[in-house]
Image (cartoon, rainbow, N blue to C red; front, side):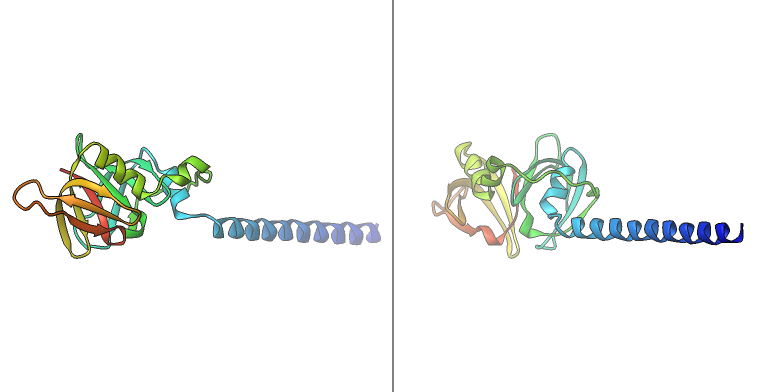
Length: 174
């Protein structure tokens, strides 16, 4: 009987050790999985929720419903009629983004970068305010290159202002 208790105790210790090792393995796998999560995939999972973005220009945060998420930009509804197109590279911090993760973007979504979104504004002849780290430029989206956008002022000067994509913090509908 004593031997049976000893072997039962050893079996219990082995089972407890195996369970503990399994918990450690799961924890390692979870950490490894989290290490591969991209911010844009978390942001895509937040579509339809309210987010608050602190931008590199240190101006007013952009807060509203997250409508769309591209590969390198987000579209936020500021009000019923106003929208903000924000490059993810201009975001210093995000608030209210859940821990959930969306699946990676498909090939079509991956091809729709900031330039595509700005070209849609140019096609619609949209008037916008572009927040940059150095100030604000207003005008109609005239031309969109590979890495820059030209804005034509509404009144006065006929010359366009060119803004590199790298300087854009937010494009806000007028």
